[in-house]
Length: 119
Image (cartoon, rainbow, N blue to C red; front, side):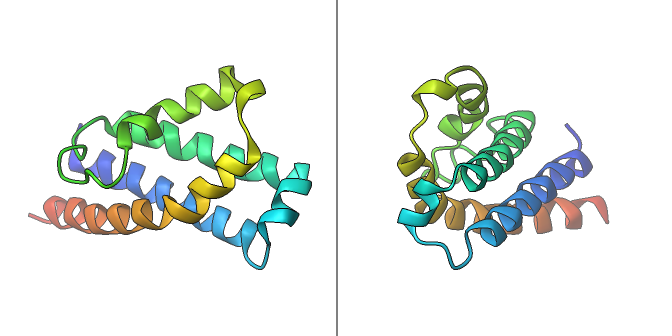
């Protein structure tokens, strides 16, 4: 995959993280757990993030061991196929604990990918 495609996928990840951040801004865990529409919106953004991560592949797995990128790539399938076993409190915890690390990684690697295209 060219670095251009990687940069695009990382941009997709960042865009959907921003959407999630906007969705949950000012929201408590209790409110999140009680709001089906909010849950659905966050889950849809997570599906997009997982699909972008799947398209990138495992190229960052060894470099970012603090982020379980393998599990992230599987998340989209889980949201689509195992939706009945998804618990909103786990989604909330993922959003609050894992998305900030993913955002930092995506920003860093997007910059690298964009710089690589300029060569």
